[in-house]
Amino acid sequence: MNGYSQRYEDALVLAATVHHDQLRKQTDIPYSTHLFHVSLILIRYGFDEDTAIAGLLHDIVEDQQYPLIKIQEQFGTKVASIVAALTEKKRDESGNPRPWEVRKQEGMDLLAHASVDAVATKVADALHNVSTISANLQREGDSVWKRFSRGAAQSIWYYHHLLVVARGRLGEHPLVEEYAAAVEQLCRLASISSEDLTPFDAEEQ
Image (tube, rainbow, N blue to C red):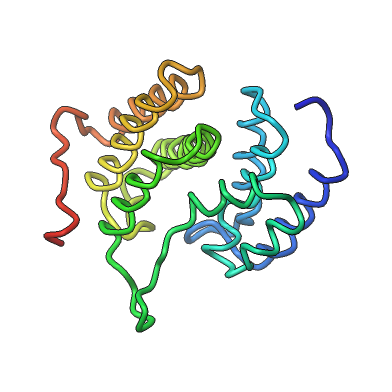
């Protein structure tokens, strides 16, 4: 992607506007900063404009209930399909919260069949999250894990399993290798070996 088109600028404005009142977990940091980082990671690794735009909008349906059809109308089918592949269904038909384990396993299953660009967008998302957690652990210690719905072991299991899926789909792509290094650092900071991670069975939760 060379330069910024009006289309990319429109996506930037949309992301900043729709997520304007959302903050990173238990911080005063605007959530939109995460979206910008994800998009910039994708640009840095040479992904096209559609994928970079999807990086900006990947949480807009899940977190803000922005209609997917509007994304398709504004930015096209490819962007909408990437966003759809990365959108979790957080509540059941009765409006009750769905278990974290079930949602994460569903996401993994979707990625196994999603486009390469969708997988790359998810890896960029996870890379920024893992890097942020590591930086916070170094500053604040283990209290950081209180911000998350699951503790260190399950959170790291998720990031490690995503790495397995990413390697299966993207091979030794430099983005995957940077993510692998970030996951390794997170394991080290949390004093958890990836070899000791026990996969959960979502159906048993």
